[in-house]
Amino acid sequence: METKNYSSESGFVLLGISSSPQLQKPLFAIFLIMYLVTVLGNVLIILVIQSDSRLHTPMYFFLSNLSFTDICFTTVIVPNMLANLLSETKVISFVGCLIQMYFFMAFANTDSYLLASMAIDRLVAICNPFHYERVMNPRRCLLMLLGSCTISHLHSLLRVLLMSRLSFCASHVIKHFFCDTQPVLKLSCSDTSSNQIVVMTETLAVITTPFLCILFSYLRIIITVLRIPSAAGKWKAFSTCGSHLTVVALFYGSVIYVYFRPLSMYSVVKDRVATVMYTVVTPMLNPFIYSLRNKDMKRGLIKLRDRIHS
View 1 (tube, rainbow, N blue to C red):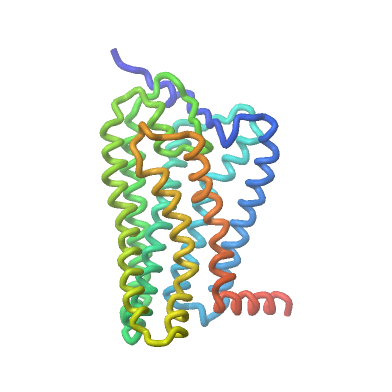
View 2 (cartoon, one colour):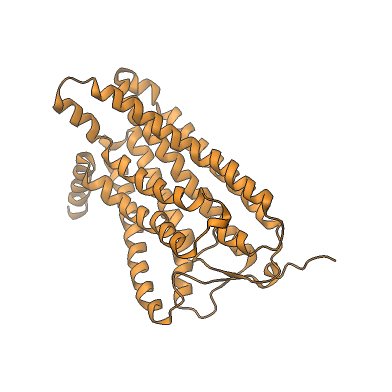
């Protein structure tokens, strides 16, 4: 007898951040402010980089694309979450859930690869400065960007196609604020072993590759910097990496906690907090991290302000 896929007809109900009615409006206000700060902050980063010719370098090319990806990343999740905080139904269609899942994973993985590209940029700048312009030429930077987007979207397509084949025949309440992989897999009455294998292997490869690239790059950077005789020279070299390392720690810390565990160890409350960290908090903090710790960005912000006021 064929199992009927009820969720493909009626959709899912997103439980949200909290089920308490008293918290809905305060949470709406908090996340709306965070979303607006994220969008405005990242748009400002892009405008500063585009308006200042001194910032037309590989490092800032990747940073502007990271800011654009962060805007898309949060826009996939937060507006729908805000609407659900003020709605009683909180329903998302089956197709809408898969579309949200696709773009969420695509932009999250693009973020990951862009962070790796920025680490490679710092590696070449510090360890091989005399060949920097030749190695990190515009064509190669563009290819790195296109490669990041292509791999990320292919990965998302594979995951969503596997998810679309599952049946959901009982509960259709997703105990999360968006359609993430683990909460949706929990609801399936199909055999999810193949999906879990893909999650733990293909995802491991896709996420671990840029992470290992970042670790290798900074290992080489540390070795090179420790050979610099003066303390001032060491500090100058390390200071160019501080902002990037902060973002990497925030992003990968929460991602590793959420995704690199078996489905049986999934925890609703803890995973919501960790997911909020890399879906909302980190994209909001990125503009502040890169602008407050970076003299070039501060100079660009002042130049853009003066241009607006003139």
